[in-house]
Length: 235
Image (cartoon, rainbow, N blue to C red; front, side, top):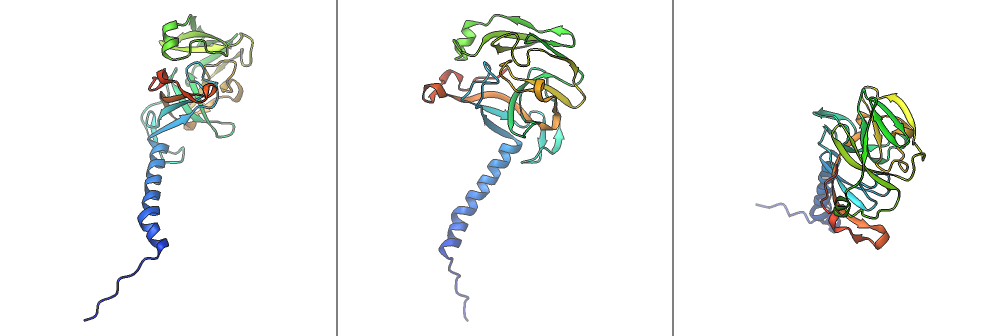
């Protein structure tokens, strides 16, 4: 009784079976999870100063509002909508690049900016002094780029920054946010390319909510770690 001789794998086939195929499978799973479940985002610009700094890597909760088909903006299910004051990651309506901005206006809101001061539905936001202890805890004490203030509206409180009251985008509106659209701004009010310039952001372009700084490197100090920003919650 004869037996069929065992097939000998070529080195290329062995490499594919033992190394390349498992690694490719892991890569597909991880990238799919990043696209649909949880992601991180490097921040290269200062448009969200003083809340988010250049060199921060932020955690993005892709399941905060909905479930999408990986690598697309197609919604499989939706259970929440972005709320005023939340920080979101979105695809730019201009060129498709990723942006990190704060939700300022939700559908139906009347938005106006006067001298870099925000008005929502005719009510002005309240601006107050910063807390030195809070600035030190966030490692932004002495941060250059403008004067910082604490902005409060409808229970939402966060830091903003501006170099002057008449810089780019210092006056806008009033304008009503349409259904299914959002008005987004950067916290560095005169150094942010946002809804004041390119208009409203469609709901489908919002990819997730930014909830924390994973880690942070100071580009101006030879990529030294900003230890106090590691794990810092974003609000």
